[in-house]
Image (cartoon, rainbow, N blue to C red; front, side):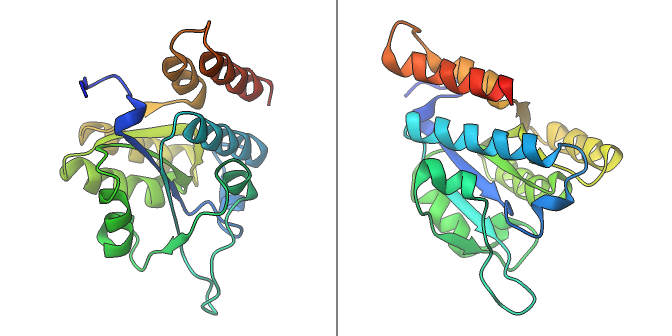
Length: 194
């Protein structure tokens, strides 16, 4: 499979949904909650359409209860196991890294809240570990414009790239005469209307 530094190839791509759980997603201040949910839903639909596996990470409640992930992920991808992380960086958790490595894919799309923590830290470690990292901005939410911008700058300097769900849908669509291309454009339009 031929890859380039700027092209996202579905056969080499995996999606990490990080901390997209009740009690955390409501803290987003840089991407309105409704828009964030629409971005997550669209990304999950693209993952299903283009057969990109997904890993879901979260943190347990203070009482040890499992994370309650956004329904938008499961609506498109079915019930996925939540890998509960024990460090701020998902890539420092053996179970999560093992799930990602098991796919054999080296391009990582990251969606999550907060961009400053749940997205930035694994993006940096994944970049250092040889992954091509793309942060899906409209499927992420930060605590403040200022701190999210600092995180994005740091990730970019480390080699990560930003992308939007809409751009991703258009890029992956391929030939628009084919059914899958049409479905990808449908996801793009659905996202545009939300």
